[in-house]
Length: 373
Image (cartoon, rainbow, N blue to C red):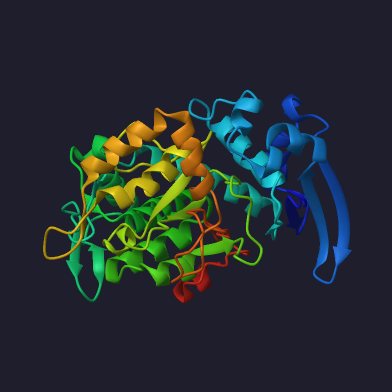
């Protein structure tokens, strides 16, 4: 990992956001590890914060962020503040600059990532690419998708849909649609505190038409990293949405097994919406995708995946360090471009995060929300 860009903050260096930064930066565990510079360019004054080279080498060698919490003695599962600190330090060690129009917006970005992680931890669903089930608070038409019925509010409806400890049952989702609902819930929770007018407009949107698929990405998310300038294969920020690609052309023809959309939860773990209490590690996720080729079956009208075979092969490989190492040497490569199945692995070059969401710096792409910004 060559460059360390960290974060760039523009706008006035005052307000709640700066006070939040002061709390994070005062942590004795990384005293002296954060470098700060100030400057002025064509867009105005800015303040840069980044980890020192020595701190990066200690806490995230080679851009590997999966051990930061352990290296710093953080307990992100037990303490919200520790989860926010893991997010903040990971951003400070970024090889690509994260630019924020204000310190408040940086603080909001950390909070909404924390909310994504917490919402995703509680989410348990039934995997299904053909059927979609929702609680009684939703109605569906082909034109609108799932929209809120009159009298129902967005946040509790999403919680009831995603969290079986609230609803008492599992609802069926594809992995991509599941990530949209988690992102929408975390965004709505943050707006309830920091931009209530925008939450009202967002809720009105979901009373008339759901935003989903490519439109959801375009409206709510920004992507960082690219095939031309890829992120390090082990660089993840808690709250990132990311894709693991299935590099096997044959099994990728099975609907729902083209790849896997997940969130990075921090502490080296990734979401597993289908098996409660069993989050993936980077190794276990790569090994699972590798063995999809072994679960491919053709004894029917169309190919399908025998998950029991996949589970058995994954268990065998993870119990054999040599087999795991051999699989990871293949799967930890950067993925091939779309439509190409050659020597690439399952690692994507980019990650996705929510756009700015506060009044005055809002940049989500929903025109009807512009009046609230």
